[in-house]
Length: 232
Image 1 (spheres, rainbow, N blue to C red):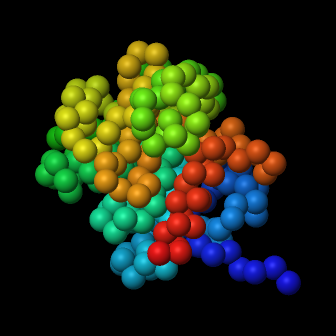
Image 2 (cartoon, helix red, strand yellow):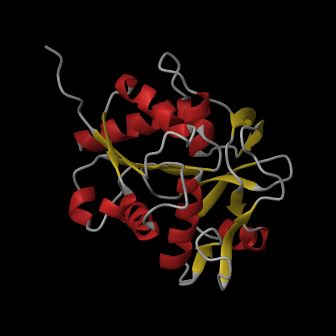
């Protein structure tokens, strides 16, 4: 008899087979050392539900059925030292949550929800990155570099068309939400939170370059942080 996984992971998003990450996540789930539960964004209406999990991953697929549900999940992870991974939409919404609740920019938003947003934090990329593999430059000493086991340049896979508005790069860079990876044009492609056990959000999608036999090192680092959280 096999023992139950020692930690539970909430995959927060709205599952749809046309989103490339979702079938890949479904295939990866049995190989992860944690129990994986899909949690629709519209179900995240109270912190009590989130307290059942040792890790929160806000997955690709925005705009979500409930933006508020995604933001609540991110805020809960940030404020309660719960390991967090956000990919694509989870990166975009981590920026929105932080700007709204830490930097007090209450109307920070994604133009996918509101094309006339007063503070358009998330906007279309100059060049779409759907299905693209591209270089990524890791900040020395960052958690993401630790997960990759190296500083410098790596190759990553994207499937996205929206990112951080360049007008807000300096604002984020001056905050505790560290920009920990860039593309060739110095555009932010990953952030992580200082003084948090594991809070990493990436515009690239490590799930797309994973197989059940070869889990991406960032996902491995995330699940290890979850197991440490469960032990505590």
